[in-house]
Each structure stands twice: as structure tokens, then as C-alpha cells.
Image 1 (tube, rainbow, N blue to C red):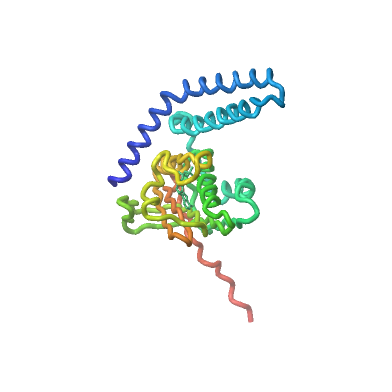
Image 2 (cartoon, rainbow, N blue to C red):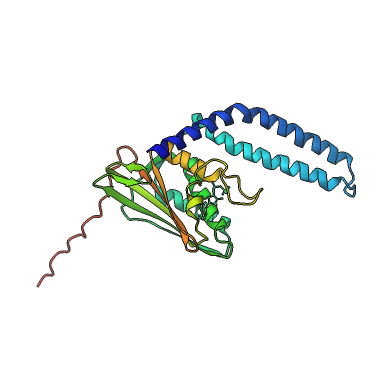
Length: 261
Ligand code: ADP
């Protein structure tokens, strides 16, 4: 619990920070890229400064993208939680996910036939899956397999894990597993921290999993990670069922009429 509370406080701090400065920062970045555009207009393509200016503008755009991600922490008011049918929503983004992972990685999506709908902001939910899949891809530079699977889990007693307690009840679980590099204990302990990244500058912001964590918590869920260096990583997400959603029990096979003699 302690770990999750501290993480929550960090997220709140980052949210305040983001809300406060991101707006001004964005204006400054717009000014930088605007002035750059003007300079580029005045320079010939063969001017020795041309490429430098292009770099400045490109980085200003990248920085603006980063600010955009930061802002998503403080845009709580735009949250629109709705009923999310997992097979349906995942099917909708499978095409995008396949494009993101490329040809060297095979992606499979399988469902528990009795999986129940959850309640979350749809855009945020899609963001979670995209972030996890992009990380999985980045952990498999030589290719591999990503498995996304859902599972209806009925907890008869509280589940204690990583200093968190998942309460008794019905949960919809999503797992995203890869066959990538895996990670060390030291890395695993820090992955949900905002700005923690092991990627090269420009390749990782360290905001992906902090964002995922925040969204899962906002939805009343839990997130756990299992990882073995050299073998791969699995993220397991527990979501409460959508209000009024009856866990769909597997139906007993329909009785067939006895053969007539
Ligand atoms: P970023 O992807 O920008 O680095 P994240 O917060 O998404 O930021 O991830 C933080 C770090 O967690 C990554 O830099 C990486 O070290 C580690 N990580 C995340 N997902 C995986 C994964 N599937 N396999 C191995 N390492 C991972």
C-alpha cells in the first residue's frame, strides 16, 4: 500500500507541475518554432545554417509533444469514463498495434469467453495498451512475440502483491506479455516513476508507464509486472467490472435431447 500511495502522490505532484507550467512552456515552444520557420524562409536550402535550423525546429516540435504528454496528467476534467467491451475495443485497435510493432514481431490477442466489460475513458484505455505494446516492441529489437490476453478472475480472498491488496470480487484482467530483453530488479523497481527511462535520449521519455499507472489507478485498478532478464516481461492489469455488469459465467453446455429410438 505504501508504495502505491507514494506513487499516487508523485503522480499528483507531476500533475500540478504539468498543469502549471505546460501552458507557458507551450507558448515558448511555439515562439521558438515560429521564429525558426521565419529564419528558414529567409535561408537558402544550401545555406550552411539551414540544417541547424531544421534541427532546432524539429526539436521544438518534439518538446511540444512531450509537453502534450505531460498535460495529459492534468486534463482530468476531460475524462469520460464509459463501458469498455474489451474484445471490441481491442479489435478496433489491433490494426494500429500491428502497424506499430512491424513485421518482425507477431502479435496475438486472445480472450476469455466470459470476460466482463470495464469502466474507463476509452482514449486513456487505448493509450495504456499502446504504451505497453510499444514498450514490448522496444524490448525486442530482433523480433519476437507479443501476447495480449484477457481473463475473467473471481477473487475469493484478497490478493496481496507488491505491497498492494486487490480486494475480493470479480475482475477483468488484461495481460500484455513479450519475449523481449526482460529487466533487472533495479529497473523493475523504478519503471512507474515519471521520467525513469533506460532508453537513449530522444528514444524514451520515461512517461509511458507513469501514465499507464495513473490511468489504471484512476479506473480503480491494479498493475503488476513479472519479468525475467533474457526471457521477457508480462504486465498484468486488474480492472473492476463496469457498474451493473454481471460477471458472465460460462454457460453449461446446452442439453441435447436424448435420441429417439
Ligand atoms: P520509456 O518507454 O520512455 O523509457 P516507460 O515509462 O514506458 O518510458 O518505461 C520505463 C522503462 O521501463 C523503459 O525505459 C524500460 O527500461 C522499462 N520497460 C518498460 N517496459 C518494458 C518491457 N516490456 N520490457 C523491458 N523493459 C521494459
